[in-house]
Image (cartoon, rainbow, N blue to C red; front, side):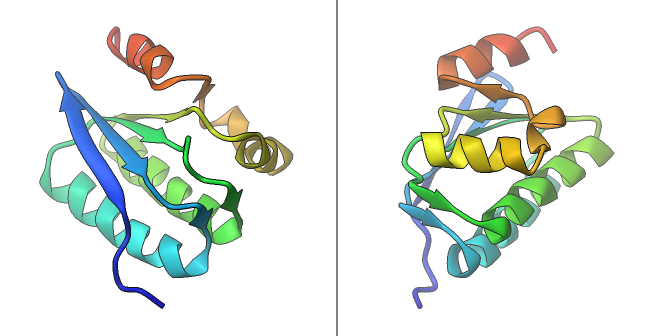
Amino acid sequence: MSDNINFELKKIGDISIFKLSEKRFDAPIAGLVKGEFTIMLHTQDVKKLILDLSEIDYCDSSGLSAILLAYRILQAEEGYIRLAAPTRHVKKLIEISQLDRILPIFDSVEAAISDLENK
């Protein structure tokens, strides 16, 4: 198991975009992502977060748990989270688990940015 995860974090105005550059978003990766989210969301004053899921081919409940952690932290801070560009498998998992009811999904990062610009 690696202690590293590949991700990019960039800001466009007051919107932070977290792109996970991993094929699998499962237990070994999810724990590391939770740590990154916890640090980032508590220390960098992030109120608008987009998770770019475009490179993830496989996600399990551990990955969803990491996404929910970010959602809970942002909700407590009156922030916003958007999911962008999930692959077909990941989108289906989110819909089956009914998380799409609380986590808005957009087909592209650009669409998610447009949605958050007015928040």
